Amino acid sequence: MFSSNFSSCVLARHTGDVMFFENKCKLPIGISEDLADLAREITDKVEKDSKPTAEQVKEWDANKLLNWIKEHRSRLLKVNQLKKFEEADIDGATFLKHAGDKKFFHEECKLPIGTSEMLTDLAIEIVGLVQKGKSTEHAPLLFSLH
Image (cartoon, rainbow, N blue to C red; front, side, top):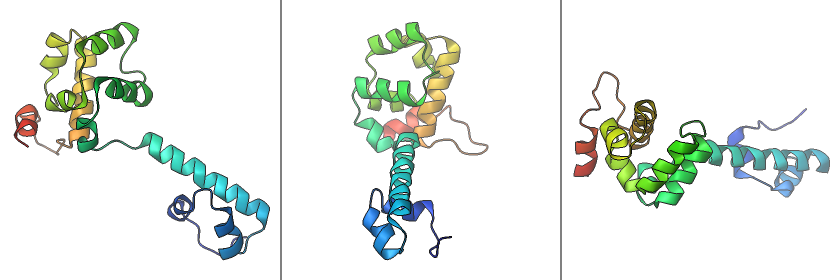
């Protein structure tokens, strides 16, 4: 049906660009509009699902971090835990500083051990300290040195 080899990369590059699909790809206007809409949907999904970098998270205030966790890890914090996390006023830099430190989330923030484990894992994931066969017990020290 299509003469061009379409990929999500091409679609994302031409988000909402009906003219590209119509003129460059020589597709009918209806199909061009559909592809432009699909490109928009793919871009929105990728942006929503993508993990932020450690550098981005370090710049977040407590509200932005909490909102990101609620949006991307909605089952991580239950209502009463959300309140505790919010009261702890943990910004992005503090969150990442405690990657690998479940004791911080459990004892300092007064969160249940399971939630503390999941927050620790999320921070480790963002920092990028997960390595096969490597311990993450040293994660707070490593992160604070950079």
